[in-house]
Image (cartoon, rainbow, N blue to C red):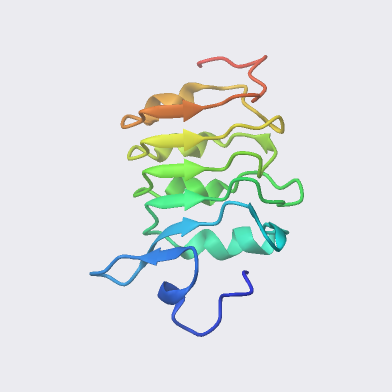
Length: 145
């Protein structure tokens, strides 16, 4: 995914953090960034598929990446340990209601012009939420069913 990711020990990779006790990946800081070499961001749908098995994530930031018009993957709703989720400016389509399964989320950022939600009942499942950013999300037909 990133050119700096070499070797088999992903816990030593840039922008990846692992739990010191279990050794499992618990944080991915994959926000698009700009540095002296120019823009750095993830492209394509392969990245999304690779995340599916990372069930121990507590922190996930994919903001600003180019996932080619992909929707937020449904499996993100099964990351029960997530406390921080930032998908702003990375995905398009309808916000999946399964995000409401993330009862440990403290911060949720979905800010983008490319997302919409017609059913807002999923928010009631976010019992730990302290910060929610839905700026620019199309809520014009939103209901709490």
